[in-house]
Image (cartoon, rainbow, N blue to C red; front, side, top):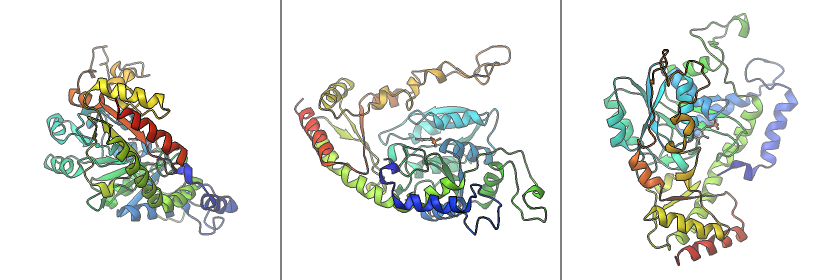
Length: 400
Ligand SMILES: *Cc1c(COP(=O)(O)O)cnc(C)c1O
């Protein structure tokens, strides 16, 4: 998964080119920057890589979600549907714009279940955020069709699936926009950073303005200080050093994915020997980024027993059903409505009555999957010794 495994001279050269000019800001400094616009160039190349018309770089994947929601006009009192298996960032961003997250079930893709999504749409639903978790596709075509029927925009949280595709089309380009993360552990990384891609010029303009204090970016005699504004903005600007890193890492993305694919298929073959094992549904193997191998046992007890053997062998898998950062029933701060706001909003009304309630048992279909799920993260570089250790542990687990 992490792009830091392949840092090299390319990243150094890109960074040094920025330091040589002394300009870390993505706008202005016309002469001093000597034509170097790393963030802008990164946006253009990333959008082109995705086959999207526009890219908007921001400070993180969480900021990308917030900027996308804000640009789509989502705000206080609105509902946004996402899935109960995702990183906390997805729903943090929904709260950030004043809206309230509604959680849909996942299915065998480990992503949003379209049938459950449809049931959870209400007149207040203003956006739908399916997540391409663990590097592979949500049922985005079905989700988009449902959303279109209800005239609700789709934001694809593609934070974990940079470079992924479904039937030849890049993930992140099916909905109104797609958001990406380049944080320290993502497939390509800029340390911290994010991107939104879209085909809509107006949506892109709104994101560009909102993420930069409302600056309209229309050339005028007064320069940046003379720019106008259409609405209240904020600051999620990416800096030049991050743009430089992004250019070097984007150039390596396809290579990283292809070595992950090789490692994933090696491990999958070994895991397939475990009696009762099945694999996560991948809608299109060619478009999988192979950042994770997700397999399921036939019961929660078997999953625990198998992982016990794997751990003993020094090759334990991630049990996402017990993971406190990625799975709904484990988000005790969400379930308990633990906001820092004195008013308790949005969990409580002004008079202290409960307003929004999250029930730990609300997603039984997801629980039936998550409790049986084991996951290996797939590295870009898999040393022979590590592969051997994992192979031995998996072979032992197959005897259980
Ligand atoms: C990493 C991640 C994010 C947030 O990205 P940051 O850059 O860390 O803010 C959002 N959604 C998902 C699914 C993620 O994995």
